[in-house]
Image (cartoon, rainbow, N blue to C red):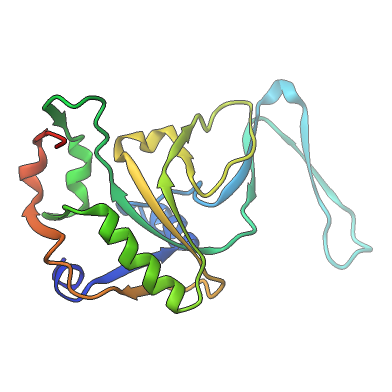
Length: 205
């Protein structure tokens, strides 16, 4: 947290890193991160998996599948920085209930008080390093629908809707962690204990 506030180090994790965290059952992990299409099937679909062995002269193996899921992974690679977003539906003061699962992400949180300036600084640093950068709110889909197509980097399983994610995506082919240094942000952010977020009141002015 101090690294972000005092030095402006924005840590962006590669797409594969989120799948890895899911396998390790760590917070923030998502096994479906980076997929572009999902096809679910069950026994009545009569799906057969054919394995072509090597060397080629050996017999192929056919397996009758009862249920499962085919996934097409994204061809675009890059790094992700995720934030929790607060969306106000009216000008009146609102009380916002934070899903308690968000408290698993750490004992403290950084509140960005000027998100527009925050994005300006991140964009400037990314561009100076030659990266293309995109951002936006996430759309959520049902991963158990029969067929789910046109899944982009800004789509996520509805299982994670409680995260209310605003995502920053940086195109980067290295497959490694990426750190963007945007400088001290104490003028537009502050650290608080995560427990203080259990009950928030928001008023747009």
